Length: 107
Image (cartoon, rainbow, N blue to C red; front, side, top):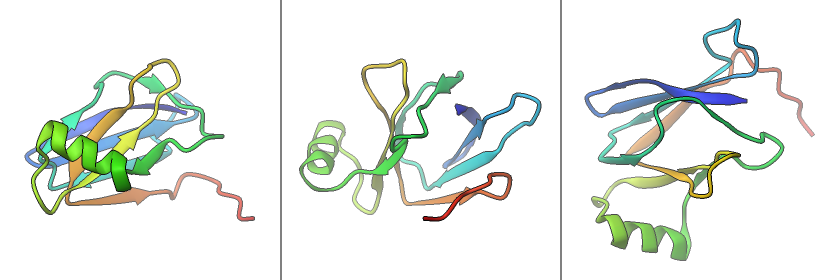
């Protein structure tokens, strides 16, 4: 799936993903209350057979929080792209996703 930043207004960052470039997006993820982000704005590819978006917890979250001085009350999220060594990061108070255009199989 190809992703890119769809919009960034105020403290809301919207990332859009598509499997077919004839659609604007198959998946939209909105990070709200963003206090910090290290993300590529142009398109990047992901291997959706592996985890692509993770909420960082434990020692890794502590290391990212300490390194970038993330404000209390924000969660750290990691986006993993195929062609880049380093992940992308977003620190936000909440996250919402629209899966309506995706056909998801259960089980």
